[in-house]
Length: 425
Image 1 (cartoon, rainbow, N blue to C red):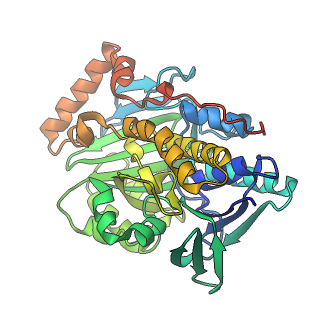
Image 2: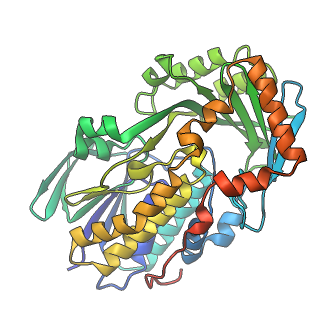
Image 3: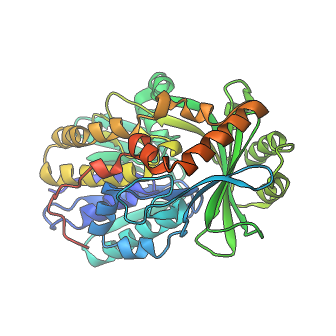
């Protein structure tokens, strides 16, 4: 009898896993429930990229053309000063062979999640049983008993039983906290001392198809990037700070306390110069604002009993790795492959998934200078800022940029996608 499966989260990884499992023959196809806490599909999230093995996964889903048609068309990165002078720039490599700061597939996270969810829904209609999709509810209690997991939903109060539960609910995973406990939570989530806010805004007169990256004193920085809509831009504001306890205090669960989060960033960028007055004003208007710590999740095992973690919930590499989306897609693919090859043995499936993903995750989580590279490239003082500008200018004029990215940039091209025999969609 096929497995019954609960997938928690409708970001990148959850719908991808469900769609791949739907492509299995009827005798192997699990009974799937997809659960999302939000009443609607989440449209928030910054510009993300799909690299290397992730491209292989979207091809198997039949989505490469759709995703490429929805990209932001960012052409590269420019490092600018307070007068908007570009000290350096690095164009994207459109061949996909060299992983620079701008991938050949740059897309808004919300748009990518929407495409993946719609593919899941379309595929669900084509197969018997399909996927049951529940919005506006979450798991209040999860109890494992023998070969079953008993789940109680918070809003409906309904109690259900599954053979397997997949937590694909992101960096601030409730599933991880419930199953592994607060003690593991404290050791698993490694903050990098960086706090980020993201939102979109109407396109300004100086906004182009370049990503403009502005640094200022106090280890503060801003990126203005292209949006999928040509009349809009996106903004990524961040502060590197290990001291001010208000940054972790306003995190809550990442979805509430928005006014406090906006107020804190507005305070920090009030005197930041450049276009920051405009950005603070637009941030206060934005209805898609999102705030979170920049962190990594490192765990000795991504499964416990019949519960398994997928994507950021188990192995977030942080936005500065450039590999988060690719890990989510690749993880979903390998987990689906492991379930296909071990339909009657959940423990074996989880062990195979872990074996396939561990080396990939370890590579992706290796950040330059052990994660302190971002601290160094965001100086505290004007002297440090001036030196940083001259360094990036030197890199530009000596054409060292792509060589450096080949050495320390995302390692997505070193990962291949093996063939599990899924039906091509």
